[in-house]
Length: 101
Image 1 (cartoon, rainbow, N blue to C red):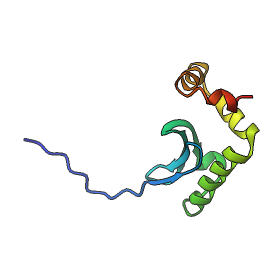
Image 2: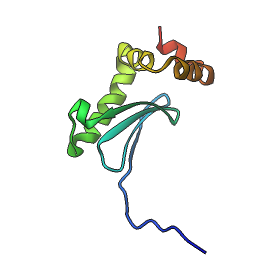
Image 3: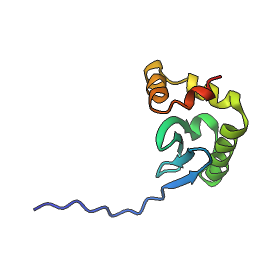
């Protein structure tokens, strides 16, 4: 019998925001995923947005703050999704339509 054992202890970081939004970083702390009710919406990479491992928590907090305070930000994030994904999100979470107005 073969058994798979994980030998590393990755540091996965998750920040729970308000109104169903959250942000999580990958094990390497190079990407942040913005989620709505645990569904991934958008990935933000450190290469594209120029954040380092040491300030990733600040970037996550800023993302979640932008979601709540900047209606244009979340509207742009949602509209940047493929049409099929946006339709699926709206079908699953009807309240998302409110973010698009």
